[in-house]
Amino acid sequence: MSWTVETLDDAPVEIIDGDRGKNYPTQNEFLDEGYCLFLSATNVTKDGFAFDKCQFITEQKDSLLRKGRVRRNDVILTTRGTLGNVAFFSDVVPFDHMRINSGMVTIKTEADKLRPRYLYYYLRSELFQSQVRALQSGAAQPQLPIRDIKKIKISYPEPTVQDYIADNIGSYDDLIENNRRRIALLEEAARLLYREWFVHFRFPGHEHVKIVDGVPEGWETTTFEEVCQTIGGGTPSTKVPAYWNDADVTWITPTDITRNNCLALLDGEKKISQEGLKKSSAKLVPPYTILMTSRASVGFFGIIDREVCTNQGFINIIPNEESSRYYLLFNLMDRVEEIRGHAGGSTYAEISKSKFRALPIVLPASELLHDFDARVRPILDQVRVLKKQSEALANARDLLLPRLMDGRLEVAA
Image (cartoon, rainbow, N blue to C red; front, side, top):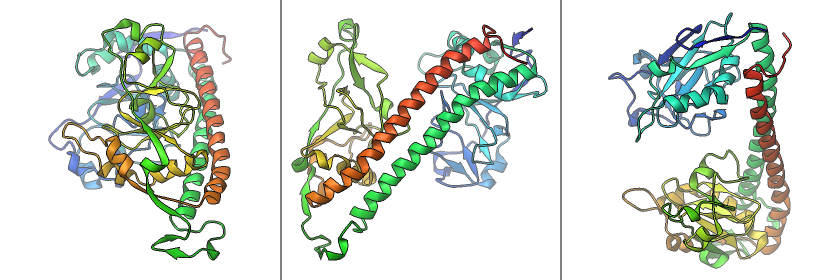
Protein backbone atom coordinates (compact mmCIF):
# COMPACT_ATOMS: atom_id res chain seq x y z
CA MET A 1 0.00 0.00 0.00
CA SER A 2 1.48 3.33 -1.05
CA TRP A 3 1.43 6.47 1.07
CA THR A 4 1.86 10.05 -0.08
CA VAL A 5 4.37 12.06 1.97
CA GLU A 6 4.48 15.81 1.42
CA THR A 7 4.50 19.15 3.18
CA LEU A 8 1.25 20.90 3.98
CA ASP A 9 2.32 23.51 1.41
CA ASP A 10 2.10 20.83 -1.30
CA ALA A 11 -0.82 18.87 0.18
CA PRO A 12 -4.43 19.30 -1.05
CA VAL A 13 -5.28 21.75 1.74
CA GLU A 14 -5.91 25.45 2.26
CA ILE A 15 -4.70 27.10 5.47
CA ILE A 16 -6.58 30.24 6.51
CA ASP A 17 -5.94 32.42 9.55
CA GLY A 18 -8.41 34.48 11.54
CA ASP A 19 -9.33 38.12 11.15
CA ARG A 20 -6.88 40.52 12.80
CA GLY A 21 -8.28 43.77 11.43
CA LYS A 22 -10.00 46.75 12.98
CA ASN A 23 -13.28 44.84 13.38
CA TYR A 24 -11.78 42.15 15.61
CA PRO A 25 -14.10 41.85 18.65
CA THR A 26 -13.21 43.70 21.82
CA GLN A 27 -13.81 42.09 25.20
CA ASN A 28 -17.01 44.04 25.84
CA GLU A 29 -18.50 42.79 22.55
CA PHE A 30 -18.52 39.16 23.66
CA LEU A 31 -21.82 37.72 24.87
CA ASP A 32 -22.87 34.67 26.89
CA GLU A 33 -25.33 33.85 24.09
CA GLY A 34 -25.47 35.01 20.52
CA TYR A 35 -25.43 34.30 16.80
CA CYS A 36 -21.84 33.15 16.28
CA LEU A 37 -19.55 31.19 18.62
CA PHE A 38 -16.19 32.96 18.72
CA LEU A 39 -13.69 30.27 19.60
CA SER A 40 -11.23 30.85 22.43
CA ALA A 41 -8.25 28.80 23.58
CA THR A 42 -10.47 26.96 26.08
CA ASN A 43 -12.67 25.64 23.24
CA VAL A 44 -9.89 23.92 21.26
CA THR A 45 -8.10 21.36 23.43
CA LYS A 46 -5.71 18.46 22.91
CA ASP A 47 -8.81 16.24 22.88
CA GLY A 48 -10.84 18.28 20.39
CA PHE A 49 -13.63 20.76 21.10
CA ALA A 50 -14.77 21.69 24.61
CA PHE A 51 -17.79 23.92 25.04
CA ASP A 52 -17.92 24.37 28.82
CA LYS A 53 -17.17 28.09 28.42
CA CYS A 54 -18.39 29.87 25.32
CA GLN A 55 -18.38 33.44 24.06
CA PHE A 56 -20.48 34.73 21.19
CA ILE A 57 -20.74 37.71 18.88
CA THR A 58 -23.81 39.17 17.20
CA GLU A 59 -24.78 38.52 13.58
CA GLN A 60 -23.95 42.14 12.78
CA LYS A 61 -20.46 41.83 14.26
CA ASP A 62 -19.95 38.54 12.45
CA SER A 63 -20.78 40.16 9.12
CA LEU A 64 -18.00 42.74 9.59
CA LEU A 65 -15.23 40.15 9.89
CA ARG A 66 -13.42 39.24 6.68
CA LYS A 67 -11.75 35.98 7.63
CA GLY A 68 -11.94 33.19 10.16
CA ARG A 69 -15.36 31.65 9.54
CA VAL A 70 -15.36 27.92 10.18
CA ARG A 71 -17.25 25.63 7.81
CA ARG A 72 -18.37 22.06 8.40
CA ASN A 73 -15.49 19.59 7.97
CA ASP A 74 -12.87 22.24 8.65
CA VAL A 75 -9.99 21.33 10.96
CA ILE A 76 -8.95 23.97 13.51
CA LEU A 77 -5.36 24.25 14.77
CA THR A 78 -4.13 26.52 17.58
CA THR A 79 -1.05 28.54 16.63
CA ARG A 80 -0.34 30.86 19.54
CA GLY A 81 0.11 30.27 23.28
CA THR A 82 -0.81 26.60 23.51
CA LEU A 83 0.30 25.22 20.15
CA GLY A 84 -0.97 22.21 18.28
CA ASN A 85 -4.40 21.70 19.80
CA VAL A 86 -6.77 20.43 17.13
CA ALA A 87 -10.55 20.26 16.68
CA PHE A 88 -12.83 19.06 13.90
CA PHE A 89 -16.05 20.86 12.93
CA SER A 90 -18.09 17.73 12.26
CA ASP A 91 -21.85 17.44 11.89
CA VAL A 92 -22.28 16.63 15.59
CA VAL A 93 -20.96 20.02 16.77
CA PRO A 94 -24.05 21.86 18.09
CA PHE A 95 -23.29 25.28 16.56
CA ASP A 96 -23.97 26.43 13.03
CA HIS A 97 -21.88 29.58 13.11
CA MET A 98 -18.30 29.64 14.42
CA ARG A 99 -15.22 31.77 13.96
CA ILE A 100 -11.64 31.24 15.04
CA ASN A 101 -9.74 33.78 17.06
CA SER A 102 -6.42 35.30 15.97
CA GLY A 103 -4.42 32.47 17.57
CA MET A 104 -5.83 29.75 15.31
CA VAL A 105 -6.05 28.67 11.69
CA THR A 106 -8.59 26.63 9.78
CA ILE A 107 -7.45 23.91 7.40
CA LYS A 108 -9.75 22.98 4.53
CA THR A 109 -9.03 19.84 2.52
CA GLU A 110 -9.88 18.63 -0.95
CA ALA A 111 -11.96 15.81 0.44
CA ASP A 112 -11.68 13.57 -2.61
CA LYS A 113 -7.92 13.40 -1.98
CA LEU A 114 -7.50 14.02 1.75
CA ARG A 115 -10.35 13.22 4.10
CA PRO A 116 -10.78 15.97 6.72
CA ARG A 117 -11.45 13.51 9.55
CA TYR A 118 -8.26 11.61 8.71
CA LEU A 119 -6.32 14.89 8.69
CA TYR A 120 -7.80 15.75 12.10
CA TYR A 121 -6.45 12.53 13.60
CA TYR A 122 -3.11 12.91 11.84
CA LEU A 123 -2.68 16.37 13.33
CA ARG A 124 -3.32 14.93 16.78
CA SER A 125 -0.63 12.27 16.33
CA GLU A 126 2.92 12.52 17.60
CA LEU A 127 4.07 12.47 13.96
CA PHE A 128 2.60 15.95 13.59
CA GLN A 129 2.99 17.25 17.16
CA SER A 130 6.76 16.60 17.23
CA GLN A 131 7.16 18.81 14.16
CA VAL A 132 5.09 21.54 15.82
CA ARG A 133 7.43 21.54 18.82
CA ALA A 134 10.49 21.70 16.56
CA LEU A 135 9.16 24.67 14.59
CA GLN A 136 7.59 26.78 17.33
CA SER A 137 9.07 30.22 17.94
CA GLY A 138 8.69 32.87 20.61
CA ALA A 139 9.78 32.45 24.24
CA ALA A 140 7.14 34.45 26.13
CA GLN A 141 4.30 33.59 23.74
CA PRO A 142 4.97 30.46 21.64
CA GLN A 143 3.65 30.74 18.11
CA LEU A 144 3.53 28.85 14.84
CA PRO A 145 3.10 31.13 11.80
CA ILE A 146 1.44 29.79 8.65
CA ARG A 147 4.76 29.92 6.81
CA ASP A 148 6.10 27.35 9.29
CA ILE A 149 2.92 25.25 9.33
CA LYS A 150 3.36 24.80 5.58
CA LYS A 151 6.77 23.18 6.18
CA ILE A 152 5.26 20.35 8.23
CA LYS A 153 5.13 16.98 6.50
CA ILE A 154 2.09 14.74 6.52
CA SER A 155 1.54 11.26 5.14
CA TYR A 156 -1.68 9.74 3.90
CA PRO A 157 -2.82 6.64 1.98
CA GLU A 158 -5.62 6.42 -0.56
CA PRO A 159 -9.02 7.81 0.55
CA THR A 160 -10.66 4.44 1.32
CA VAL A 161 -7.82 3.59 3.71
CA GLN A 162 -8.04 7.06 5.23
CA ASP A 163 -11.71 6.36 5.96
CA TYR A 164 -10.83 3.02 7.55
CA ILE A 165 -8.21 4.61 9.81
CA ALA A 166 -10.46 7.52 10.80
CA ASP A 167 -13.36 5.17 11.57
CA ASN A 168 -11.19 2.99 13.79
CA ILE A 169 -9.75 5.90 15.76
CA GLY A 170 -13.13 7.60 15.79
CA SER A 171 -14.78 4.61 17.46
CA TYR A 172 -12.69 5.33 20.57
CA ASP A 173 -13.66 8.99 20.52
CA ASP A 174 -17.33 8.05 20.13
CA LEU A 175 -17.17 5.91 23.28
CA ILE A 176 -15.34 8.68 25.16
CA GLU A 177 -17.94 11.22 24.05
CA ASN A 178 -20.75 8.90 25.16
CA ASN A 179 -19.11 8.63 28.58
CA ARG A 180 -18.73 12.42 28.73
CA ARG A 181 -22.45 12.86 28.13
CA ARG A 182 -23.32 10.26 30.75
CA ILE A 183 -21.03 11.99 33.24
CA ALA A 184 -22.67 15.35 32.54
CA LEU A 185 -26.12 13.85 33.08
CA LEU A 186 -25.07 12.18 36.34
CA GLU A 187 -23.51 15.35 37.75
CA GLU A 188 -26.55 17.37 36.68
CA ALA A 189 -28.82 14.86 38.46
CA ALA A 190 -26.82 15.33 41.67
CA ARG A 191 -26.95 19.12 41.33
CA LEU A 192 -30.69 19.09 40.74
CA LEU A 193 -31.23 16.86 43.76
CA TYR A 194 -29.24 19.29 45.89
CA ARG A 195 -31.31 22.24 44.70
CA GLU A 196 -34.59 20.37 45.08
CA TRP A 197 -33.85 19.47 48.70
CA PHE A 198 -31.78 22.34 50.02
CA VAL A 199 -32.70 25.37 47.92
CA HIS A 200 -36.38 24.74 47.24
CA PHE A 201 -36.83 22.78 50.50
CA ARG A 202 -38.65 19.91 48.82
CA PHE A 203 -36.77 17.23 50.73
CA PRO A 204 -38.37 13.96 51.94
CA GLY A 205 -40.89 14.79 54.65
CA HIS A 206 -40.81 18.54 54.02
CA GLU A 207 -44.60 18.68 54.37
CA HIS A 208 -44.25 18.08 58.11
CA VAL A 209 -41.40 20.53 58.79
CA LYS A 210 -42.00 24.17 59.74
CA ILE A 211 -40.02 26.99 58.18
CA VAL A 212 -38.53 29.19 60.91
CA ASP A 213 -36.68 32.41 59.95
CA GLY A 214 -36.41 31.25 56.35
CA VAL A 215 -34.99 27.77 57.02
CA PRO A 216 -36.57 24.47 57.99
CA GLU A 217 -36.90 23.83 61.71
CA GLY A 218 -33.95 21.87 63.10
CA TRP A 219 -31.44 23.19 60.57
CA GLU A 220 -28.45 25.10 61.92
CA THR A 221 -26.94 28.34 60.64
CA THR A 222 -23.20 28.30 61.18
CA THR A 223 -19.93 29.00 59.31
CA PHE A 224 -17.53 26.89 57.28
CA GLU A 225 -15.00 27.25 60.09
CA GLU A 226 -17.33 25.17 62.26
CA VAL A 227 -18.09 22.39 59.77
CA CYS A 228 -14.76 21.63 58.07
CA GLN A 229 -11.01 21.94 58.11
CA THR A 230 -9.41 24.19 55.49
CA ILE A 231 -5.89 23.38 54.34
CA GLY A 232 -3.79 25.35 51.88
CA GLY A 233 -0.93 24.27 49.68
CA GLY A 234 2.50 25.26 48.48
CA THR A 235 5.14 24.93 45.77
CA PRO A 236 8.61 23.50 46.39
CA SER A 237 11.47 25.62 45.05
CA THR A 238 11.98 24.93 41.37
CA LYS A 239 15.69 25.73 41.88
CA VAL A 240 16.20 22.51 43.87
CA PRO A 241 16.14 19.50 41.53
CA ALA A 242 15.82 17.09 44.47
CA TYR A 243 12.32 18.45 45.12
CA TRP A 244 11.19 17.37 41.65
CA ASN A 245 13.38 14.36 40.80
CA ASP A 246 12.31 10.84 41.83
CA ALA A 247 8.91 12.41 42.44
CA ASP A 248 6.07 10.19 43.65
CA VAL A 249 3.76 12.64 45.45
CA THR A 250 0.84 13.81 43.33
CA TRP A 251 0.84 17.62 43.31
CA ILE A 252 -2.32 19.30 42.00
CA THR A 253 -2.39 22.75 40.39
CA PRO A 254 -5.48 24.77 39.39
CA THR A 255 -4.87 23.86 35.74
CA ASP A 256 -5.45 20.19 36.61
CA ILE A 257 -8.90 21.17 37.87
CA THR A 258 -9.90 23.70 35.21
CA ARG A 259 -8.91 21.34 32.37
CA ASN A 260 -10.80 18.42 33.90
CA ASN A 261 -14.30 17.94 32.52
CA CYS A 262 -15.96 16.52 35.63
CA LEU A 263 -15.71 16.40 39.42
CA ALA A 264 -13.72 13.15 39.40
CA LEU A 265 -10.03 14.01 39.17
CA LEU A 266 -7.82 11.01 38.36
CA ASP A 267 -4.33 12.50 38.53
CA GLY A 268 -2.25 15.65 38.34
CA GLU A 269 0.16 16.65 35.61
CA LYS A 270 3.11 17.03 38.00
CA LYS A 271 4.58 15.28 41.00
CA ILE A 272 6.99 16.33 43.72
CA SER A 273 9.39 14.32 45.86
CA GLN A 274 8.97 13.46 49.53
CA GLU A 275 11.76 15.95 50.25
CA GLY A 276 9.95 18.63 48.25
CA LEU A 277 6.84 17.96 50.32
CA LYS A 278 8.75 18.34 53.58
CA LYS A 279 10.58 21.51 52.51
CA SER A 280 7.50 23.40 51.30
CA SER A 281 4.16 24.50 52.68
CA ALA A 282 2.38 21.82 50.61
CA LYS A 283 0.51 19.33 52.82
CA LEU A 284 -0.95 15.95 52.07
CA VAL A 285 -4.73 15.85 52.24
CA PRO A 286 -6.73 12.62 52.54
CA PRO A 287 -8.66 10.88 49.75
CA TYR A 288 -11.90 12.57 48.68
CA THR A 289 -10.90 15.97 50.04
CA ILE A 290 -12.85 18.74 48.27
CA LEU A 291 -10.23 20.60 46.22
CA MET A 292 -11.39 24.16 45.54
CA THR A 293 -9.34 26.60 43.48
CA SER A 294 -8.97 29.85 45.40
CA ARG A 295 -6.62 31.99 43.29
CA ALA A 296 -7.02 33.51 39.79
CA SER A 297 -9.50 30.86 38.58
CA VAL A 298 -11.61 30.86 41.74
CA GLY A 299 -14.37 28.36 42.39
CA PHE A 300 -13.48 25.24 40.42
CA PHE A 301 -13.76 21.86 42.12
CA GLY A 302 -12.34 18.38 41.98
CA ILE A 303 -12.19 15.23 44.10
CA ILE A 304 -9.46 12.60 43.86
CA ASP A 305 -9.59 9.16 45.46
CA ARG A 306 -6.12 9.16 47.05
CA GLU A 307 -3.78 11.31 49.12
CA VAL A 308 -2.48 14.37 47.25
CA CYS A 309 -1.08 17.80 47.92
CA THR A 310 -1.78 21.04 46.06
CA ASN A 311 -0.06 24.29 45.27
CA GLN A 312 -1.02 27.53 47.00
CA GLY A 313 -3.92 28.19 44.64
CA PHE A 314 -6.30 26.01 46.66
CA ILE A 315 -8.43 25.85 49.74
CA ASN A 316 -8.74 22.13 50.48
CA ILE A 317 -11.86 21.27 52.43
CA ILE A 318 -12.12 18.30 54.79
CA PRO A 319 -15.58 17.96 56.40
CA ASN A 320 -15.79 17.31 60.12
CA GLU A 321 -18.61 14.84 59.48
CA GLU A 322 -18.25 12.38 56.60
CA SER A 323 -21.98 12.50 55.85
CA SER A 324 -21.74 16.22 55.04
CA ARG A 325 -19.03 15.87 52.34
CA TYR A 326 -21.23 16.01 49.27
CA TYR A 327 -23.64 18.49 50.81
CA LEU A 328 -20.69 20.87 51.32
CA LEU A 329 -19.47 20.24 47.77
CA PHE A 330 -22.77 21.06 46.10
CA ASN A 331 -23.45 23.93 48.47
CA LEU A 332 -20.16 25.50 47.36
CA MET A 333 -20.81 24.77 43.68
CA ASP A 334 -24.17 26.52 44.03
CA ARG A 335 -22.47 29.60 45.52
CA VAL A 336 -19.54 30.13 43.15
CA GLU A 337 -20.44 33.73 42.30
CA GLU A 338 -20.79 34.55 46.00
CA ILE A 339 -17.38 33.00 46.68
CA ARG A 340 -15.81 34.95 43.83
CA GLY A 341 -17.40 38.11 45.20
CA HIS A 342 -15.33 37.67 48.36
CA ALA A 343 -12.09 37.31 46.40
CA GLY A 344 -9.79 40.31 46.55
CA GLY A 345 -6.43 41.15 45.02
CA SER A 346 -5.15 43.65 42.45
CA THR A 347 -3.01 41.28 40.34
CA TYR A 348 -5.38 38.32 40.44
CA ALA A 349 -8.50 37.37 42.37
CA GLU A 350 -7.99 35.29 45.52
CA ILE A 351 -10.23 34.34 48.41
CA SER A 352 -8.31 33.92 51.66
CA LYS A 353 -8.88 31.04 54.05
CA SER A 354 -10.03 33.49 56.73
CA LYS A 355 -12.73 34.96 54.48
CA PHE A 356 -13.77 31.50 53.36
CA ARG A 357 -14.02 30.18 56.91
CA ALA A 358 -16.26 33.11 57.86
CA LEU A 359 -18.79 32.38 55.11
CA PRO A 360 -22.18 31.33 56.53
CA ILE A 361 -23.68 27.94 55.79
CA VAL A 362 -26.99 26.39 56.72
CA LEU A 363 -26.48 22.82 57.91
CA PRO A 364 -29.51 20.52 57.49
CA ALA A 365 -30.60 17.94 60.03
CA SER A 366 -28.23 14.99 60.40
CA GLU A 367 -30.69 12.39 59.04
CA LEU A 368 -31.20 14.44 55.88
CA LEU A 369 -27.44 14.75 55.33
CA HIS A 370 -27.09 10.97 55.63
CA ASP A 371 -29.96 10.49 53.16
CA PHE A 372 -28.45 12.93 50.65
CA ASP A 373 -25.03 11.28 50.97
CA ALA A 374 -26.54 7.83 50.39
CA ARG A 375 -28.15 9.03 47.15
CA VAL A 376 -25.35 11.18 45.75
CA ARG A 377 -22.29 9.09 46.65
CA PRO A 378 -23.20 6.26 44.18
CA ILE A 379 -23.80 8.84 41.46
CA LEU A 380 -20.32 10.34 41.87
CA ASP A 381 -18.79 6.86 42.20
CA GLN A 382 -20.27 6.08 38.78
CA VAL A 383 -18.83 9.34 37.43
CA ARG A 384 -15.39 8.17 38.55
CA VAL A 385 -15.86 4.75 36.91
CA LEU A 386 -16.83 6.38 33.61
CA LYS A 387 -13.92 8.83 33.84
CA LYS A 388 -11.49 5.93 34.33
CA GLN A 389 -13.04 4.09 31.39
CA SER A 390 -12.56 7.16 29.21
CA GLU A 391 -8.95 7.50 30.35
CA ALA A 392 -8.29 3.86 29.39
CA LEU A 393 -9.98 4.38 26.01
CA ALA A 394 -7.92 7.51 25.37
CA ASN A 395 -4.70 5.68 26.21
CA ALA A 396 -5.59 2.80 23.87
CA ARG A 397 -6.49 5.26 21.11
CA ASP A 398 -3.25 7.19 21.54
CA LEU A 399 -1.23 3.98 21.31
CA LEU A 400 -3.04 2.92 18.15
CA LEU A 401 -3.00 6.32 16.45
CA PRO A 402 0.71 6.54 15.48
CA ARG A 403 0.82 2.90 14.40
CA LEU A 404 -2.03 3.48 11.97
CA MET A 405 -0.68 6.82 10.79
CA ASP A 406 2.84 5.68 9.95
CA GLY A 407 1.82 2.50 8.17
CA ARG A 408 3.16 0.05 10.76
CA LEU A 409 -0.20 -1.74 10.86
CA GLU A 410 -1.72 -3.29 7.79
CA VAL A 411 -5.15 -1.80 7.24
CA ALA A 412 -7.96 -2.89 4.98
CA ALA A 413 -8.84 -0.77 2.01
